[in-house]
Image (cartoon, rainbow over all chains, first blue to last red; front, side, top):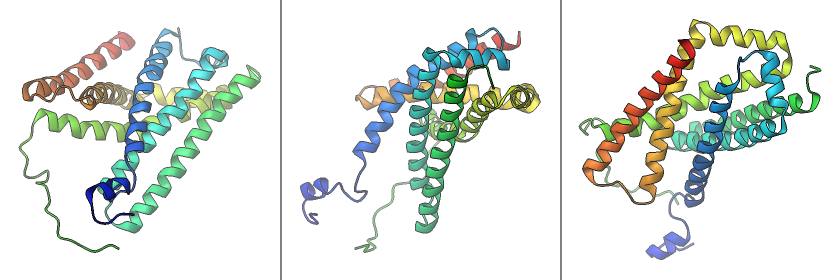
Length: 129
Length: 128
């Protein structure tokens, strides 16, 4: 990697080593979040009640289960990117920062897996819970 | 590798005079963090409860409709709208628009007004 010229540093992606891709993905997921969450919130509002039976029947529909899975991927990805920046900006000590980022990954993947599995279980096993 | 150079620091929080743009910027991070924690835990709990059966769902439902659930719910509603409106403002600024001082300030203020109004409308619809 270049250590001298400005162009060399840009090609070596500067002190952070990466960034543009992270920045762009944050914007892509932000745009998708608007669509998915406006759909999600309006759909919940259109349900007559939010009891177990109604919610399960609602999630069973492919046109709900699939957007819901996309929402889980997208929203969770977006919050992971956001919290990563938050940690990188405010946790200064190297060891704590690495630990916090590690925990963030566990938290994101763990909660996303739980949420996605719940949707798939409802979608595939239907009312026989 | 990690040679320590004394680099100039930009003025920090304590030096800036509070302004609406600054407030909205800080709120964007705060609301994002709140949703990534409380919002995500609540959302995941809701789905897992629904997938676990009527009893588990009832426990979620009781908690969500109780006093604490109501406070968290109203809080997250405002948080959601504030983050969304200020996020849209950021997307507009990303294309290079809205940097004129007055415009920038107006739009920052609009996100606050919008999020409070939207929260009132949503909860008025639910509760009334």
